[in-house]
Length: 575
Ligand code: ATP
Ligand code: MG
Image (tube, rainbow, N blue to C red; front, side, top):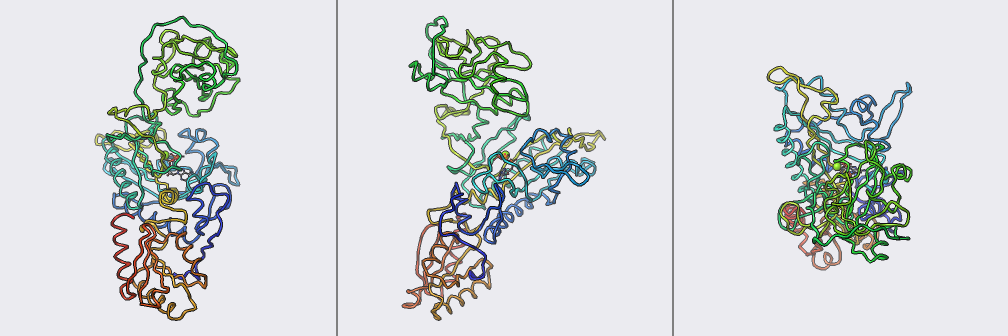
């Protein structure tokens, strides 16, 4: 490709709208343009990267035995009503009507469609297992689209769905996909960790998220420093902490004006934070759920939802709190209204172990001290609802853990019969009995993977693509196109290299050398071949490796050969 013909409008200045490196550099390098919040166009260089990632995904999916299909993006409301997800998805789903007033959505995912697609045609156990996948746009009206391609409203996902006759089969399909994902993210050159993920009501450990490790990641991940344990913090169940037993006192009401937060309380009343018990209240499908954890801990709302059930988790409104005798800022089980179908109190076991602690009195401006929950909290449900911290040991081996940020680039999920039962999708087993398929679903955020690679691989000048997903592998830069000797040699080299590769860019633009060097670093070609002064004086060309910054000079006759060696070496190192 000739840079003079390439549609790649690079920007000189940092775009103000960009909040993370990947977003900034994709805009700046002329790969991406925004059309509306969370909606983007891919320009030629960006598109090439997407296609390369898709190709890696496709090759590994095919190698794993999955078969590619294509389903519609526009989907009828009925199938979503059958599983109840028309309402569950809520505002995140883009909904539309046709001219006959029929309702549809733009698919955020395809479990409903694929299950109804196969339910009348995969009829016998003899036809199973089957794994079908597609590469397609997904639509989610995210509350906060941000970080460019990391959380957009239209994005490319590879989604696969497996159908098995039983749970053992599903586990095999799951492991098969897990292995394929490992190969895919290895090939994309990412630094990632598969981590245990929340699998909702289905239970077991049949959900893993593939997390690209990066500070800009929105997911919190806990990793053991000693054993193999790694999990999304939502999924990690911290061990219960014991407190030093002490002589118990009687509970005592005391005035605590201006102590509406736990930090005010600690500061104003000089209570150690481990002796405070704080409250967080949720409205889950209309049910008030009061959660008590120690002041130095945070509530894991996923653990709460898994315990209570329900679909829609919201912070409880003041009206709902008051209806159950709770006073915002001073909430606790003490003096609360009666529990029932519409109100439950959950207490974390570590909070339950506090002696002579401080907690709200459900009276404006008052707390109780000398509260011992095991004695004073009546009729509460005790279950682990706190998030793990770096002060906790590994849930598996007890060694220290580290918390870190990850970008979820993929997820594998053992679904069981959730969708096949809801959609009456069955096959006949060996005894002629109708059984629901045992399913799994497996997603990869293709466009998010592109962003994650940049988050991990950039410097202040621009992107440092791994060879496998770079838009072009090599750029040839004659520093002065007016110089016939330089330009002639550059063209010759370009001709020689393009005979074997479609991955070569010749920067034949009549621009200053500085502009070309900046663009090359910004766009992130893995290898740059520079023809300049050295070529004129002694016939050598400069070869620069973007990722390492290594520079070498080789006789021009060896340039093409040497670049091939460098590229093979980079590929072998997954760089
Ligand atoms: P998140 O928790 O980040 O919202 P999710 O768990 O809802 O993601 P899945 O339903 O598991 O996402 O979708 C499969 C993959 O699609 C994710 O692993 C992620 O890589 C990608 N993905 C999901 N939402 C978005 C988005 N808004 N923008 C870009 N990629 C996304
Ligand atoms: Mg997910």
